Amino acid sequence: MKPYKNKINRIRTFALALIFIGIVIMYVGIYFRNQPVVMVIFMLLGVVAIVGSTGVYAWIGLLSMKTVPVECPNCGRHTKMLGRVDICMHCNEPLTMDPALEGKEFNQDYNKKNSKI
Image 1: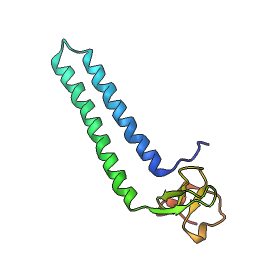
Image 2: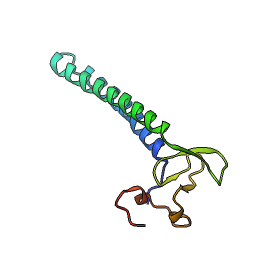
Image 3: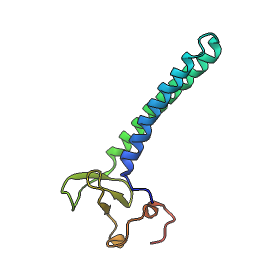
C-alpha cells in the first residue's frame, strides 16, 4: 500500500512536476533546430505545460484559502484540512473533523460524496 500524503502537498507536487515536464519538452525541441515547425510545436507544448502548472498553483492557492486550519493532536503544529479526512502535513497523523469517523481506520474514500460510513 502506498503511503498517504496531504492533499494540498500532492497537488503542489503535481504542479511542480508540470513545470519540469514543460522544461524537458522544450529541451527536446532544441534537438529539432533543423525543422523549425517541429521545434515550435515542442516549444509551445512546453509553454502550455508551464502555463498549466501556473493554473494549478493558482487553483490550489484559492483552495488553500478555504481550508480549515486545525492543530494536529500528535505534533501540535497547525495544518490545513481538505475534506472529511486528511493527513497532517508535518507528521502524517490521520485527521478528521467528522465525529462519526472518530476512531475509525483512515481511508481516503471517506472524502467521496457517495461514501458510506
